Amino acid sequence: MAGHVPEEYYYTKDHEWAQVDENIVTVGITEFAQTQLGEVVFVELPEEGQKVTQGQPFGVIESVKAATDLYAPVSGTVIEVNRNVENDLSFLNDDPNNEGWLIRIEMDTEKELVNLMRSPDYKKLIAEAK
Image 1 (cartoon, rainbow, N blue to C red):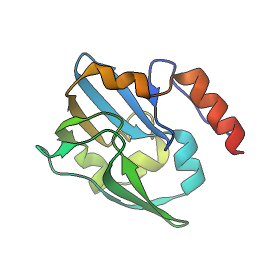
Image 2 (image 1 turned 135 degrees about the vertical axis):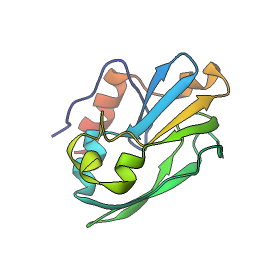
Image 3 (image 1 turned 45 degrees about the vertical axis):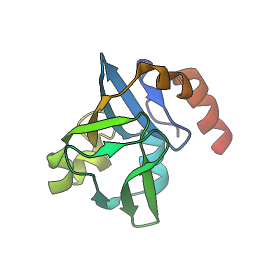
Image 4 (image 1 turned 90 degrees about the vertical axis):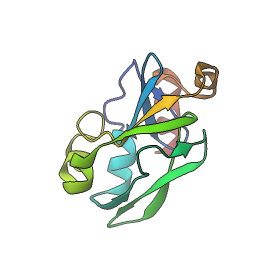
């Protein structure tokens, strides 16, 4: 099952979503990624103030099945980390598209958004992955 793919989000080929609000980008993993991983048991997130680079790892997520890097959808500075997820992984396991967001990035440039997928292209990617 693909899960819910919000139309307003941007997506990476590595199954992160990015919700853009002016120059602030909220980042999480997609429902598809959470389903593929299974129950998440550990997440390592960056510190606030840390710089991230589009396409480069910013953290790690581990499940009962696998461990994988988390990739930044845009370059910028981490301005907020979702401490709720760090303290209670059920947010990530139960609602990865909303309450289970991971970090917020102050984006360096909107030009990088062209490198991300929109909902129709992401839906094709996950349909091919099945």
